[in-house]
Length: 174
Image 1 (cartoon, rainbow, N blue to C red):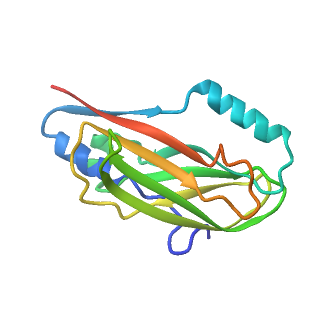
Image 2 (cartoon, one colour):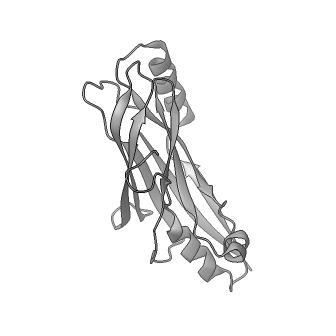
Image 3 (tube, rainbow, N blue to C red):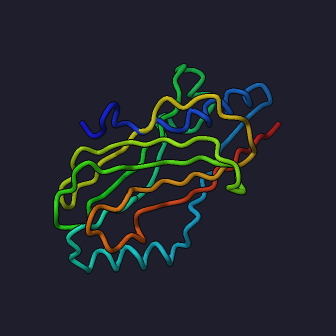
């Protein structure tokens, strides 16, 4: 209903593979760090919420289903799905919205994976969840960089809130 094909952002199968490989080494965890300073997020959100831009899409946050707990993923035999929340902060319904995710090495210099998801339509004030699935064969790294962004719609002038970037740190305790 949200995407051409499958609207669920199953994106972090790479983490599934990484965590599965770490299960032999002991307890593994994933720390997700939002790269944008809190003051920048607050400033851009307050600006967009006080303006009445006709077209204004925003990436709000990400989450994973199941949570990035290797025991839970292995027990259920499932891959993790990356969920990205997108809000229409404008006053016009947007159609054929394109959401993208990119996973790279922590330094950002080597692309590991890139996926695209489509939202058929999103009404003003509505939040839709994009789901990325089908990610596999992600090489193990101790840290990754994850970028999520929504392409600007025609006429969109405030694009500061169209993207979010995260650092993913894999920790292993033995």
